Length: 59
Image (cartoon, rainbow, N blue to C red; front, top):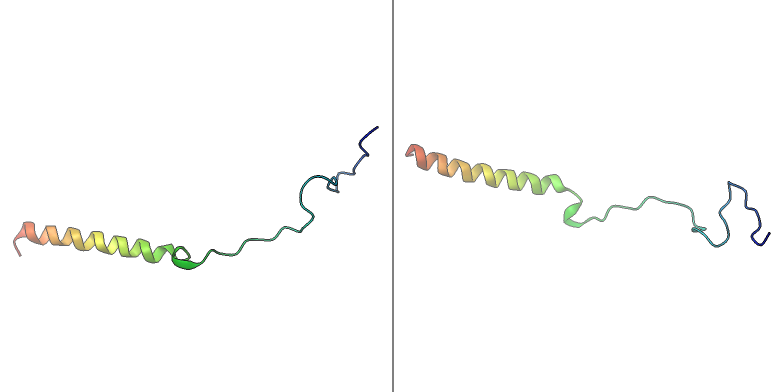
């Protein structure tokens, strides 16, 4: 047999990574808190719709 048997719990020598898995941290920046941007977009849409509503009603 040319390839030695590797037990199921072990990684064969030429495959995978020997480092342990770890969770990646947050990217940060402006995308760390997307609800801020969503709230700004919603507030702009509400203000825009109120402008046209008041214009339609004649205020």
